[in-house]
Length: 271
Image (cartoon, rainbow, N blue to C red; front, side, top):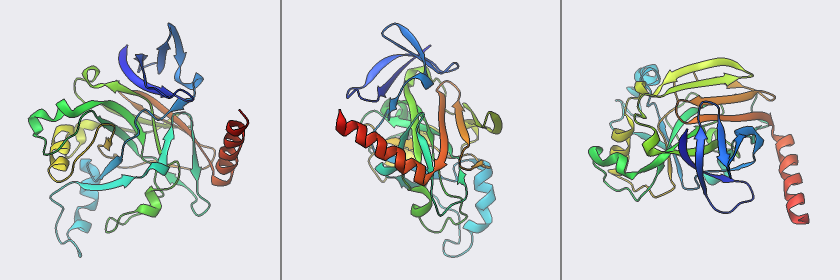
């Protein structure tokens, strides 16, 4: 069992309890629940920052492209992008497949949740600024370019499922050696490990806070492994990260997702 904090839908405050990452269960008021039995809120509500090309194989894949115009050489700092608040989604939530896309890319990412204001953090002290770790599916519409921010591809509604909880920092001894597995419809389609990061967690936090401040509740995605799986409407996605748990979502057509959102809003107004 591991200590974690989380939010349950309809409850305004953050709860703390024990979770079993392997079985993906949580104990609430003495009763053990499977994560799929509960309706979740997002466990962190700060800004979400992603990092491109932070897995070694993915870096190698784009190495030649990075030496061509307009950049001419590989970047010396982390390549960052944002997942705005409209992308936030939860464990069990549906991922909308936009009408102008035929498939989506699954981005299995370890999310580092910031615990205190971090500015110009020394690598040796980086873990002092971390509250815990969660799972994020950094969903994107497939694209090839790295020359411009892929806002249209990465920032669609519901494109950042997160959770189900944040495991406290002390429970994860080495975040730079965690197995990551992605299952689509129950079939293993991707397997990697955070030991393959170009910049490990502490280095990444130090390099980013050298030029920008991170605040409590912000979530830093350490990167997406190479070979991100493709999914379509009807597919069920499960991302497992060792010592954290499992994040599950189903892809649906955007029109069906909008109808479901409308039904939720109607029920909320009637209460």
